[in-house]
Length: 336
Image (tube, rainbow, N blue to C red; front, side, top):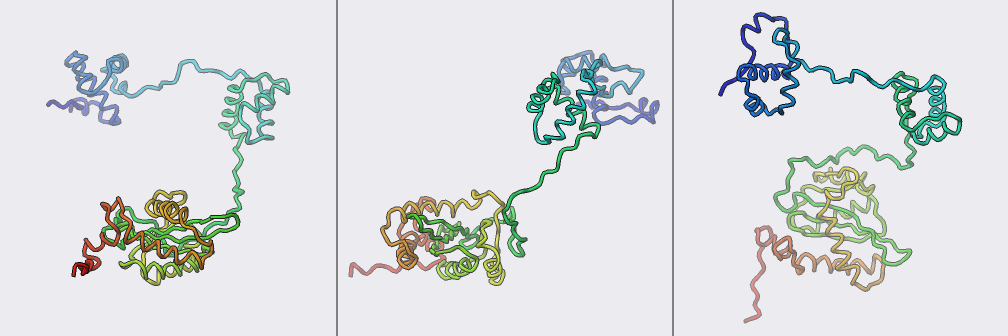
C-alpha cells in the first residue's frame, strides 16, 4: 500500500504554509491524480465522486499550494433587499406590538395598513432587523403554578452501571389510584422486586410521606429478602419522611427523571395485573377496613399460587426456593 503525503521538497519550499487536515487530504488526492491520470483509481482510493475530483482539479494550481483550500460557495450574485425604509419601519412597529406573532399574521396586518408584502418578505425583513440588533425576542416567563420540588438530600438517579443481580437488589415502588365508585378514592402502594417478581401491596385512604414510611415497614416485613435499593417516581409521597427513613435504614433510593414511567415498567405492569385480576373481579365494600384483608389474601395468592410467565410459569415463592433463598417445601405426608 502506498501512502501519499506532502513531500519534503514542498515542506522546504513553503515552510510558513499551514494546511488543515482537509486541505492536506485534497493535496494527496490531486497528487495521486497528477501522477496516475487515472480518475477511477483516485475516486476508488479516496471514496470521491468524479464530479468532486474534476472540481478540485479545476481549482488546483501546482504553483500555488493555497489553491487546495476550500473556496467559498457564496453565489456571485445575491438577492438584494427590495423593500423600502418605510416598510421596514412598519414591520418593526407591528412586530414590536405583537412580539409572538409569526410572519404570516404580520403580513396580513401590514396588507391591511397598505403595505403589500408577502409572508416570505416579512420573514426576511425580521431576519434583517434581528441581525442589526433592532429586534430582540422577548424573554419568556414561566406561568405554571406548579410548586417546584425541593432538592432531594438522599435520592439520586439510578447509576447506569447498577444492575440488580439478586432478589432485593432493586424494588420498584409506585402508587395506584383506586376509584371503584364515584366519590371513593383509595391509594394502593405497590412494591415489586424486579428479580423474583414478589409483590407487596397495601391500601390506604391517602398517599402521604408518612403513609409511605408506614408502607416501608410493611415492605421490609413481608418481602422475604432484605431490601437493598428502592426505585420511585417523583411523587410527593416519596419525599421528606420516606426519604429520611430510607437513609436511616441504609436503603439506596433511586428517583426517576420526570415523565419516564417506562423506567418503572415492572411495577407499572404489576398495577395493571392487580387492577384486572383483583379489583375488577372482587366484590367487597370499598373501605380500607373491608378491603385490607381481601387485598392481603390476594397478595398471598399472587406470590404463592399464581404462575408467572416471566419466571417460567413458576410462582415467586418457587423461584426463591429454587435459588436457595428460601427453604424448600416440606414433603407432603398425605400418602401416609
